[in-house]
Length: 446
Image (tube, rainbow, N blue to C red; front, side, top):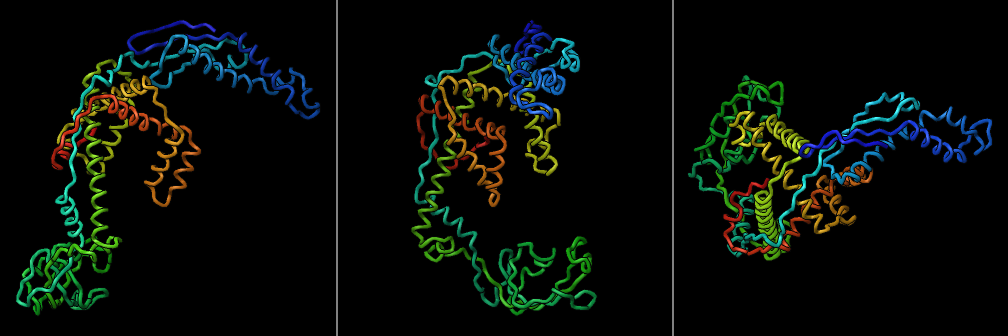
């Protein structure tokens, strides 16, 4: 094998590699001899097929495999001999005619191009200092959480007969709907409770019931939407003869044992404990996210080095695909929606560069710390991913069992989290108690 370096500029390296046709022929003969004892062809006893016949029958196919194996072996050796850490899959450009090579008429010649991981010395985690924001959960915070739950369990209580309805009240009504003077199917109902402002009825219906009181009778005139699901009523004008039976005021649920039982708890004490644990978990998670953000910001500030262009391009492509998806769905961030596409791309390119830089830094810190990913950790990650798809857990697990590459992709986030944990363990971290609002402000994590 002959190797000649063609280029060494920045993070780009390229080599011209030649494997002689004689070397390929030698490998072919060795492969045929290795196969001969196992070859079983009609007209020959097993293991007695002449090598010349094997060459004639299978030589081309065997040589194809040899060429692929030779490229892989030569590429790996070149990277190792030149102490190159590739930043991605190397590019292989065959220069010789492939058919001539596999027929033994030409040397195997190809160009190997590769981007390398930049050489840099990562910061020593022991020299870093961070402030971890923490919030203590108190009884008042738990009370607020219970109050929020109660808002979702609104009850309605009958108001006085003279009380007039307002938005967010409920009215108990009888009604008969008519189109062109004729009652229609589904347009009649007795004792229906309608929350005013809920938007559950035809547009305009609820608005006309604001200000009514028990005993009132009125005609509610509306027009069915043009896209109404009942085609016969779409776009039609209708009148609903309506009688108001009651006006009901909204009232938050009483926070007591009966309230707790609606959430599957034995009593209020059990519900309070469950709410406390959930709230504490949220606070701890937010505190950890804040600390991680501070660590990433500091690592980004401490390291400046050239980035492999293709890694950045790949990261940007992933980000931009998500941006375009959000655009199409009308879900683009309000600030981003105001930017030109040129400005938006420039901003997200900076984010892509930051992510690649931080990924390389964390990888280097993790490597120096000899961090390993266990099979158990991988399995736990796969199970956690499967739980995100209720009812399809088994299919998700089977997907990973059949796709080693997908499993390999699970390693990156696990490795990153363990590297961050290593930094926290070795850096000087001081806790600072803050309010819940301060803990959750400006929590945009990149």
